[in-house]
Length: 261
Image 1 (cartoon, rainbow, N blue to C red):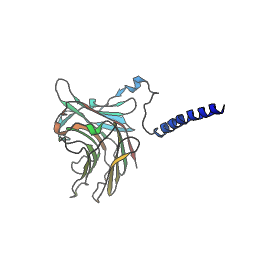
Image 2 (cartoon, rainbow, N blue to C red):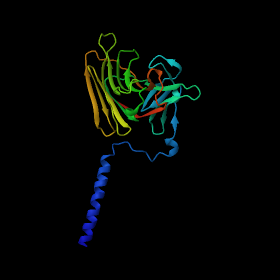
Image 3 (spheres, one colour):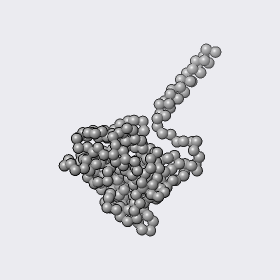
Image 4 (tube, helix red, strand yellow):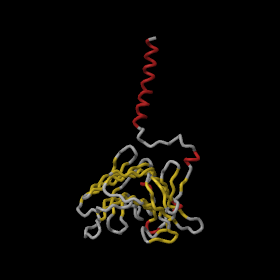
């Protein structure tokens, strides 16, 4: 009997270790089996050029004619939807027949000021085509002023670095734009990106997964940083209206956006 108890004891050890490891990974977003397949495949498209995502209402850019900014592109509300899990999908798509590429952009109706902005993104941002741009930013609508952004793009050149943090000064100042660029690499299609605004500083952070492994961080301080409350923009577009060099459509999913004052 003693030998049997020891056998059971040694058999249970690896099981206990296995369950212990699984508990440590619960912070990673897992599939929701309680939702049936019909709900998971549900697509909620914009109504009256607006959509609800992460508890906020967002305006959707829809333009069958080219718009000057950003990138002199075509924009379509059909390139944006929210699925049954509440995840936002943005897609850069090619229209059959016309060969036009349509981009995706939303902007929040609510204006945000100082605080923490957090974007949970699904997609291989490190593998975007050289002509594709994905952005998450605070923007007043006045070009070259009052903006803090995180952008992923190689700006048409394969050897350019792909992650860019930018801060544009408040309106009516003579300050120049501040920017920082680096190479961003992933091993899986999940990342978190943060902007923390204060009166005289902006902090940027990027994480290589949903478990909190930080890989890039930059702090910028200046008295001319914008104090305005501004909408949040999220967009996916073609640099200078040039199609992806691989001619492949692109889809990025934002699982959630969180703002904390």
